[in-house]
Length: 316
Image 1 (tube, rainbow, N blue to C red):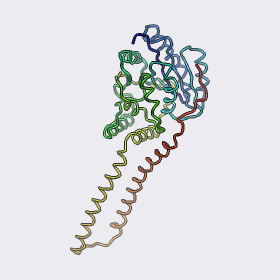
Image 2 (spheres, rainbow, N blue to C red):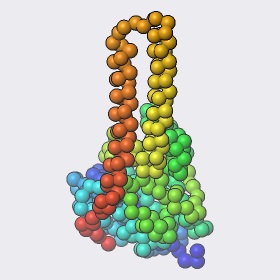
Image 3 (cartoon, rainbow, N blue to C red):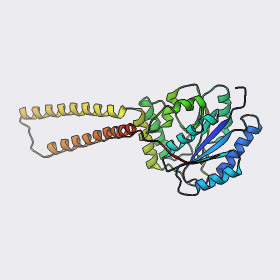
Image 4 (cartoon, rainbow, N blue to C red):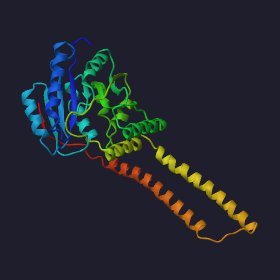
Protein backbone atom coordinates (compact mmCIF):
# COMPACT_ATOMS: atom_id res chain seq x y z
CA UNK A 1 0.00 0.00 0.00
CA UNK A 2 1.62 3.21 -1.22
CA UNK A 3 -0.36 5.78 0.76
CA UNK A 4 -1.06 5.83 4.46
CA UNK A 5 -4.34 4.01 5.16
CA UNK A 6 -7.35 5.74 6.66
CA UNK A 7 -8.31 3.64 9.68
CA UNK A 8 -11.60 3.93 11.53
CA UNK A 9 -12.19 2.52 15.01
CA UNK A 10 -15.80 1.56 15.77
CA UNK A 11 -16.86 1.39 19.42
CA UNK A 12 -20.44 0.31 20.29
CA UNK A 13 -21.61 1.93 23.55
CA UNK A 14 -24.50 1.18 25.86
CA UNK A 15 -24.68 3.13 29.12
CA UNK A 16 -20.93 3.78 29.12
CA UNK A 17 -21.02 7.30 30.61
CA UNK A 18 -18.59 6.29 33.37
CA UNK A 19 -16.07 4.80 30.97
CA UNK A 20 -16.28 7.21 28.02
CA UNK A 21 -14.05 10.04 29.36
CA UNK A 22 -11.10 7.67 29.76
CA UNK A 23 -11.89 5.75 26.57
CA UNK A 24 -11.92 8.87 24.38
CA UNK A 25 -8.61 10.05 25.83
CA UNK A 26 -7.00 6.64 25.21
CA UNK A 27 -8.35 6.34 21.66
CA UNK A 28 -7.34 9.90 20.77
CA UNK A 29 -3.84 9.26 22.17
CA UNK A 30 -3.63 6.04 20.13
CA UNK A 31 -4.62 7.71 16.85
CA UNK A 32 -2.36 10.70 17.52
CA UNK A 33 0.59 8.39 18.08
CA UNK A 34 -0.05 6.30 14.97
CA UNK A 35 -0.43 9.42 12.84
CA UNK A 36 2.75 10.96 14.27
CA UNK A 37 4.74 7.79 13.49
CA UNK A 38 3.45 7.69 9.93
CA UNK A 39 1.51 4.45 10.42
CA UNK A 40 -1.96 5.74 9.48
CA UNK A 41 -3.44 8.78 7.74
CA UNK A 42 -4.37 11.93 9.64
CA UNK A 43 -7.89 11.39 8.25
CA UNK A 44 -8.32 8.38 10.53
CA UNK A 45 -11.09 8.54 13.12
CA UNK A 46 -13.00 6.81 15.91
CA UNK A 47 -16.79 6.31 15.86
CA UNK A 48 -18.73 5.91 19.09
CA UNK A 49 -22.08 4.22 18.39
CA UNK A 50 -24.70 4.93 21.03
CA UNK A 51 -26.98 1.89 21.21
CA UNK A 52 -29.98 3.65 22.76
CA UNK A 53 -28.30 4.40 26.08
CA UNK A 54 -30.43 5.65 28.96
CA UNK A 55 -27.62 7.56 30.70
CA UNK A 56 -25.50 10.50 29.50
CA UNK A 57 -23.55 8.45 26.94
CA UNK A 58 -24.71 10.44 23.88
CA UNK A 59 -24.17 13.81 25.54
CA UNK A 60 -20.61 12.76 26.37
CA UNK A 61 -20.01 11.56 22.81
CA UNK A 62 -21.18 14.95 21.50
CA UNK A 63 -18.86 16.77 23.92
CA UNK A 64 -15.86 14.61 23.04
CA UNK A 65 -16.53 15.02 19.31
CA UNK A 66 -16.26 18.78 19.82
CA UNK A 67 -13.11 18.36 21.90
CA UNK A 68 -11.23 15.82 19.76
CA UNK A 69 -10.94 16.10 15.98
CA UNK A 70 -10.73 12.32 15.53
CA UNK A 71 -14.01 11.53 17.32
CA UNK A 72 -17.30 10.94 15.48
CA UNK A 73 -20.66 9.91 16.89
CA UNK A 74 -23.57 7.77 15.72
CA UNK A 75 -26.81 7.63 17.71
CA UNK A 76 -29.30 4.83 17.08
CA UNK A 77 -32.98 5.48 17.64
CA UNK A 78 -33.24 2.72 20.23
CA UNK A 79 -31.45 -0.18 21.87
CA UNK A 80 -30.93 -2.90 19.26
CA UNK A 81 -28.15 -4.92 20.87
CA UNK A 82 -24.38 -5.07 20.59
CA UNK A 83 -24.15 -6.92 17.27
CA UNK A 84 -26.58 -4.65 15.42
CA UNK A 85 -25.01 -1.51 16.89
CA UNK A 86 -21.60 -2.73 15.76
CA UNK A 87 -22.98 -3.50 12.29
CA UNK A 88 -24.43 0.02 12.10
CA UNK A 89 -21.03 1.57 12.81
CA UNK A 90 -19.27 -0.67 10.31
CA UNK A 91 -21.68 -0.20 7.42
CA UNK A 92 -22.20 3.55 7.90
CA UNK A 93 -18.48 4.30 7.67
CA UNK A 94 -17.33 1.65 5.17
CA UNK A 95 -16.72 4.17 2.40
CA UNK A 96 -14.88 6.62 4.66
CA UNK A 97 -11.96 4.37 5.60
CA UNK A 98 -9.66 1.82 4.04
CA UNK A 99 -10.29 -0.47 7.02
CA UNK A 100 -12.36 -0.41 10.19
CA UNK A 101 -11.40 -1.84 13.58
CA UNK A 102 -14.17 -2.89 15.96
CA UNK A 103 -13.59 -2.87 19.71
CA UNK A 104 -15.78 -2.57 22.80
CA UNK A 105 -15.90 0.81 24.53
CA UNK A 106 -14.67 -0.59 27.86
CA UNK A 107 -11.21 -1.08 26.25
CA UNK A 108 -10.62 -4.37 28.01
CA UNK A 109 -9.22 -5.49 24.66
CA UNK A 110 -5.67 -4.14 24.52
CA UNK A 111 -5.44 -1.26 22.02
CA UNK A 112 -1.64 -1.45 21.87
CA UNK A 113 -1.96 -4.23 19.25
CA UNK A 114 -3.85 -1.91 16.87
CA UNK A 115 -0.54 -0.97 15.24
CA UNK A 116 0.18 -4.67 14.60
CA UNK A 117 -3.27 -5.01 13.01
CA UNK A 118 -2.60 -2.07 10.72
CA UNK A 119 0.80 -3.42 9.70
CA UNK A 120 -0.77 -6.75 8.71
CA UNK A 121 -3.42 -4.87 6.75
CA UNK A 122 -0.77 -2.82 4.95
CA UNK A 123 0.93 -6.10 4.03
CA UNK A 124 -2.24 -7.28 2.29
CA UNK A 125 -4.29 -8.97 5.02
CA UNK A 126 -8.02 -8.26 4.74
CA UNK A 127 -9.15 -9.48 8.17
CA UNK A 128 -7.05 -9.34 11.34
CA UNK A 129 -8.50 -11.06 14.40
CA UNK A 130 -7.62 -9.97 17.91
CA UNK A 131 -7.21 -13.20 19.89
CA UNK A 132 -6.74 -13.55 23.64
CA UNK A 133 -3.61 -15.41 24.67
CA UNK A 134 -5.26 -16.97 27.72
CA UNK A 135 -8.24 -16.63 30.07
CA UNK A 136 -6.50 -16.49 33.43
CA UNK A 137 -8.27 -13.24 34.34
CA UNK A 138 -11.71 -14.83 33.90
CA UNK A 139 -13.61 -16.53 36.71
CA UNK A 140 -13.56 -20.34 36.79
CA UNK A 141 -17.18 -20.44 35.63
CA UNK A 142 -16.75 -18.00 32.74
CA UNK A 143 -13.52 -19.61 31.58
CA UNK A 144 -15.01 -23.09 31.43
CA UNK A 145 -18.34 -22.08 29.91
CA UNK A 146 -16.41 -20.24 27.18
CA UNK A 147 -14.36 -23.38 26.55
CA UNK A 148 -17.54 -25.44 26.29
CA UNK A 149 -19.03 -22.91 23.86
CA UNK A 150 -16.03 -22.98 21.51
CA UNK A 151 -15.88 -26.78 21.63
CA UNK A 152 -19.58 -27.05 20.77
CA UNK A 153 -19.13 -24.63 17.87
CA UNK A 154 -16.15 -26.64 16.63
CA UNK A 155 -18.05 -29.94 16.80
CA UNK A 156 -20.88 -28.37 14.83
CA UNK A 157 -18.31 -27.34 12.20
CA UNK A 158 -19.07 -23.64 12.59
CA UNK A 159 -16.20 -21.52 11.32
CA UNK A 160 -15.25 -19.45 14.36
CA UNK A 161 -11.91 -18.18 15.70
CA UNK A 162 -11.05 -19.60 19.13
CA UNK A 163 -10.80 -16.98 21.91
CA UNK A 164 -11.81 -14.19 19.54
CA UNK A 165 -14.68 -11.83 20.39
CA UNK A 166 -15.42 -8.81 18.19
CA UNK A 167 -11.99 -7.18 18.26
CA UNK A 168 -10.93 -7.25 14.62
CA UNK A 169 -9.82 -5.24 11.61
CA UNK A 170 -11.78 -5.56 8.36
CA UNK A 171 -10.77 -4.10 5.02
CA UNK A 172 -13.21 -2.15 2.88
CA UNK A 173 -13.86 -5.08 0.55
CA UNK A 174 -14.64 -7.38 3.49
CA UNK A 175 -17.11 -4.78 4.79
CA UNK A 176 -18.63 -4.48 1.32
CA UNK A 177 -19.17 -8.24 1.35
CA UNK A 178 -20.63 -7.99 4.87
CA UNK A 179 -23.21 -5.49 3.62
CA UNK A 180 -24.56 -8.23 1.33
CA UNK A 181 -25.70 -10.25 4.34
CA UNK A 182 -29.33 -9.43 5.09
CA UNK A 183 -29.59 -11.49 8.27
CA UNK A 184 -31.66 -10.35 11.22
CA UNK A 185 -30.16 -12.90 13.62
CA UNK A 186 -26.63 -11.50 13.62
CA UNK A 187 -23.58 -13.42 14.79
CA UNK A 188 -20.62 -11.50 13.39
CA UNK A 189 -18.05 -13.88 14.88
CA UNK A 190 -19.39 -16.51 12.51
CA UNK A 191 -20.23 -14.29 9.54
CA UNK A 192 -16.81 -12.64 9.12
CA UNK A 193 -14.83 -15.91 8.82
CA UNK A 194 -17.47 -17.16 6.37
CA UNK A 195 -16.76 -14.24 4.01
CA UNK A 196 -13.25 -15.47 3.37
CA UNK A 197 -10.36 -13.32 2.06
CA UNK A 198 -6.90 -13.36 3.62
CA UNK A 199 -6.76 -13.27 7.41
CA UNK A 200 -4.23 -12.96 10.20
CA UNK A 201 -4.15 -12.81 13.99
CA UNK A 202 -2.64 -10.68 16.71
CA UNK A 203 -2.51 -11.89 20.32
CA UNK A 204 -3.11 -9.85 23.45
CA UNK A 205 -3.96 -10.12 27.14
CA UNK A 206 -7.37 -8.93 28.27
CA UNK A 207 -7.33 -6.03 30.71
CA UNK A 208 -9.50 -5.21 33.70
CA UNK A 209 -12.47 -2.89 33.25
CA UNK A 210 -11.55 0.50 34.73
CA UNK A 211 -15.06 1.92 35.22
CA UNK A 212 -18.72 0.96 34.94
CA UNK A 213 -19.94 -2.62 34.80
CA UNK A 214 -20.08 -5.41 32.25
CA UNK A 215 -23.02 -5.30 29.84
CA UNK A 216 -22.83 -9.07 29.35
CA UNK A 217 -24.20 -10.90 32.42
CA UNK A 218 -24.63 -14.68 32.25
CA UNK A 219 -28.13 -14.69 30.74
CA UNK A 220 -26.97 -12.43 27.89
CA UNK A 221 -23.88 -14.56 27.26
CA UNK A 222 -26.06 -17.70 27.18
CA UNK A 223 -28.50 -16.04 24.78
CA UNK A 224 -25.62 -14.87 22.58
CA UNK A 225 -24.12 -18.37 22.49
CA UNK A 226 -27.46 -19.96 21.64
CA UNK A 227 -28.05 -17.39 18.87
CA UNK A 228 -24.61 -18.17 17.44
CA UNK A 229 -25.29 -21.91 17.41
CA UNK A 230 -28.78 -21.73 15.89
CA UNK A 231 -27.82 -19.03 13.37
CA UNK A 232 -25.02 -21.07 11.85
CA UNK A 233 -25.91 -24.71 12.36
CA UNK A 234 -28.89 -27.03 12.02
CA UNK A 235 -27.15 -29.52 14.29
CA UNK A 236 -29.73 -29.08 17.12
CA UNK A 237 -32.40 -30.20 14.64
CA UNK A 238 -30.31 -33.26 13.86
CA UNK A 239 -30.18 -33.95 17.58
CA UNK A 240 -33.98 -34.16 17.53
CA UNK A 241 -33.76 -36.91 14.91
CA UNK A 242 -31.01 -38.73 16.82
CA UNK A 243 -33.03 -38.49 20.03
CA UNK A 244 -36.04 -39.96 18.20
CA UNK A 245 -34.00 -42.96 17.05
CA UNK A 246 -32.62 -43.52 20.56
CA UNK A 247 -36.11 -43.44 22.07
CA UNK A 248 -37.42 -45.78 19.38
CA UNK A 249 -34.61 -48.23 20.17
CA UNK A 250 -35.33 -48.02 23.91
CA UNK A 251 -39.02 -48.63 23.22
CA UNK A 252 -38.11 -51.77 21.27
CA UNK A 253 -36.07 -53.00 24.24
CA UNK A 254 -38.94 -52.28 26.61
CA UNK A 255 -41.34 -54.07 24.30
CA UNK A 256 -39.04 -57.11 24.25
CA UNK A 257 -38.86 -57.03 28.04
CA UNK A 258 -42.67 -56.82 28.29
CA UNK A 259 -43.19 -59.75 25.89
CA UNK A 260 -40.60 -61.83 27.74
CA UNK A 261 -42.22 -61.08 31.08
CA UNK A 262 -45.61 -62.09 29.68
CA UNK A 263 -44.31 -65.38 28.28
CA UNK A 264 -42.56 -66.35 31.52
CA UNK A 265 -45.40 -65.17 33.72
CA UNK A 266 -43.37 -62.54 35.58
CA UNK A 267 -45.69 -59.60 35.09
CA UNK A 268 -45.67 -57.30 38.11
CA UNK A 269 -48.58 -54.90 38.09
CA UNK A 270 -47.71 -51.29 38.90
CA UNK A 271 -48.06 -47.75 37.81
CA UNK A 272 -44.32 -46.98 37.58
CA UNK A 273 -43.83 -48.89 34.34
CA UNK A 274 -46.71 -46.93 32.83
CA UNK A 275 -46.23 -43.42 34.20
CA UNK A 276 -42.45 -43.05 33.88
CA UNK A 277 -42.32 -43.77 30.10
CA UNK A 278 -45.16 -41.27 29.62
CA UNK A 279 -43.26 -38.59 31.51
CA UNK A 280 -40.03 -39.42 29.72
CA UNK A 281 -41.52 -39.36 26.22
CA UNK A 282 -43.54 -36.23 27.03
CA UNK A 283 -40.45 -34.40 28.26
CA UNK A 284 -38.40 -35.38 25.21
CA UNK A 285 -41.18 -34.31 22.87
CA UNK A 286 -41.47 -30.91 24.54
CA UNK A 287 -37.68 -30.49 24.36
CA UNK A 288 -37.69 -31.31 20.65
CA UNK A 289 -40.63 -29.01 19.97
CA UNK A 290 -38.73 -26.26 21.78
CA UNK A 291 -35.70 -26.60 19.50
CA UNK A 292 -37.89 -26.69 16.41
CA UNK A 293 -39.76 -23.65 17.73
CA UNK A 294 -36.49 -21.71 18.05
CA UNK A 295 -35.74 -22.28 14.38
CA UNK A 296 -39.29 -21.46 13.32
CA UNK A 297 -39.02 -18.22 15.32
CA UNK A 298 -35.78 -17.32 13.54
CA UNK A 299 -37.37 -18.05 10.17
CA UNK A 300 -40.27 -15.80 11.17
CA UNK A 301 -37.89 -12.92 11.95
CA UNK A 302 -35.85 -13.42 8.78
CA UNK A 303 -38.90 -13.58 6.52
CA UNK A 304 -40.20 -10.22 7.80
CA UNK A 305 -36.85 -8.61 6.90
CA UNK A 306 -37.22 -5.78 9.38
CA UNK A 307 -34.36 -3.22 9.45
CA UNK A 308 -31.64 -3.98 11.98
CA UNK A 309 -31.41 -0.38 13.18
CA UNK A 310 -32.40 3.23 12.56
CA UNK A 311 -29.97 6.12 12.84
CA UNK A 312 -31.24 9.11 14.79
CA UNK A 313 -28.21 11.41 14.74
CA UNK A 314 -24.68 11.54 13.43
CA UNK A 315 -21.83 13.78 14.51
CA UNK A 316 -18.77 14.29 12.31
